Image (tube, rainbow, N blue to C red; front, side):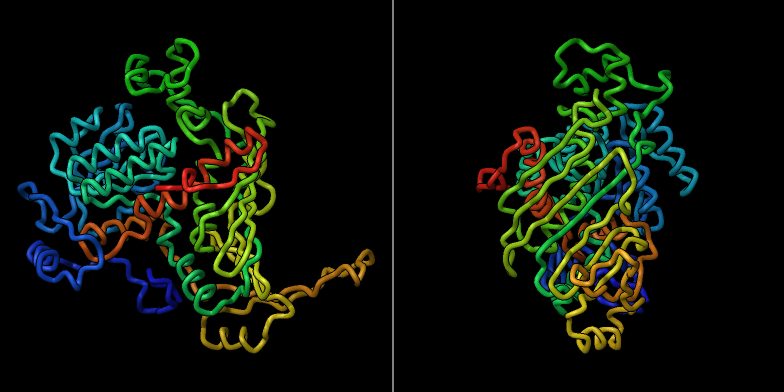
Length: 472
């Protein structure tokens, strides 16, 4: 069994293909059938000669590694016409051109300047996958050019930048999806909608735990051949010298270009690069913003990097169920501890969930209602994996031990790449067939607390959130 995009276990509903919709049908629905259209009405621009009338015309700003992840996740989505790509590194644009030419047998226009691309091309939608400090300028630029935007998270390297993106979305009336792709993942939507909210599987969720532990081998500096990298004057023009206390050499600028995640003026570091995905899930599943954060971080191994290499933080929540705490750690120095996941720990059960099916498990507390869980298994909402088995051993002290929990699994999996459902949701919204699952305003509501983790770690003080900290 596979999940539908609504998160319901409907075997026949696992169909993410966009329904065929002619341009005439689309315009009819947008202007006359408002009751049938779930998302904000949107009008696709006039199409170039030769392009299918109802194709969405797409451009890319930023053609690095994350662009490759997004492109590979969307290549099987029908009804898309790739038109243009832009990056200040010519070799990256060339790779994007070749990838599209190879797969679709047509070429695209190539640019080194995003504004020039937006001025010259007729685009319906733009994907922004540039460094964090360029997210806000590029997103606003594309929205004001009349395009719908899918922008990678973190929204910006500053909360002010993120707020400016919400303003631009509201001002232009265009769609702006932020790349918190778990929000569209059927596994996550099923766990929240069916198991937590409808079935109250966990009981009262008291604690949440999440982590992303990455090995040293995956945290090393990125290097590239100097001959294909932008020159110093180009990198200065595009702000890669921001925050420097001296005039940077070409070598230093190129290190910043390739490793912008290490620099405080260009990014939020590991807590936003990796942690933002999972802290977003804390807020989404708990249905609340935290009321405070305490944090600790250190440059324990990578001593010459500006950001902490390891960060731990605790958020305090008042949820509809009561008080809860959420602990999160991001480590770039060890992969021990079970990879990356979020764990929602309740009085009756715990849901460990991840983009990786291997890390996704469910546990029933020994005191939970057996009949209730048995019925969920009979209805196909859960699969029982194993009865709990005590670890035993001569060193076990009976009065210290709790009865081991039984282990369960979700009834199905996702057969697509993790980013694909989120991109499909974006395209469906562009066609007026769905609401965005994570527009810029909802993304900022969730991201706002993350901007205060590094300040809390630096100051070694608890930050109690106010409207000033969290407003969108």
